[in-house]
Length: 277
Image 1: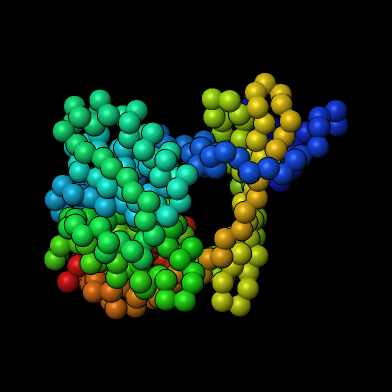
Image 2: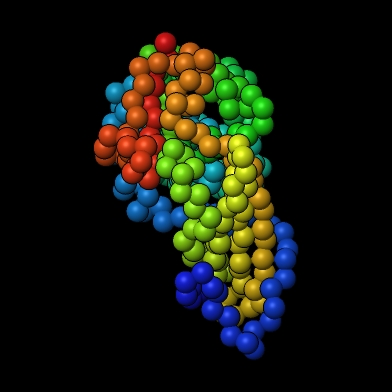
């Protein structure tokens, strides 16, 4: 496995230099560094409670590699995930196919589509609850994109339906200006993976940089792939204001999935819930 020491990768001098390449499926790398067992143990009690109270049809925008789609479908819900990234959609479909037996046994359903969040109205369907997780909203940084996305998602919720999103606490992050983040490690069946993350802050946005380092087992050449995304700070007030414009109300803000009160000066996350008016 990969050894991480502080902010440095432990590479022996005899090993080849890094080479920058585009991996065939970046989604597999993202999924490899997620501890799904730990994450779902933390998140699913609240998500399942809200979903059972609201109904059986769940929409998951920006579903990423589909861990929540699978987990909720295996609990008997009818789940549709969508993502703008084709690789993520392909990975999620494979995940659904692999879990088909367990999903059917629970009488659940699962599907996935490629779709931008602001185009959610194109689904022409009605859902009981929407879960937008994994700090997805800050990446909707183009002019008017975040409001369009919230309006799109709200349009496919029935009246009284629940919208919940989990993002980092930008009220705190914008003060701290954290630029380096913990290294994450994982593996695919063929490769060892290391994810390096860092950020630089501008006047009204931040540039979030990710670099995956990967090598074939047992000791292949290290390869690197880096990408940068533009993010906007989704403060609690901004989210509340835009959600109001999108037709959502009855807001609740929590600092974690146990519903601890949100503290803009201390909470790591902002869990924001609302209802379709």
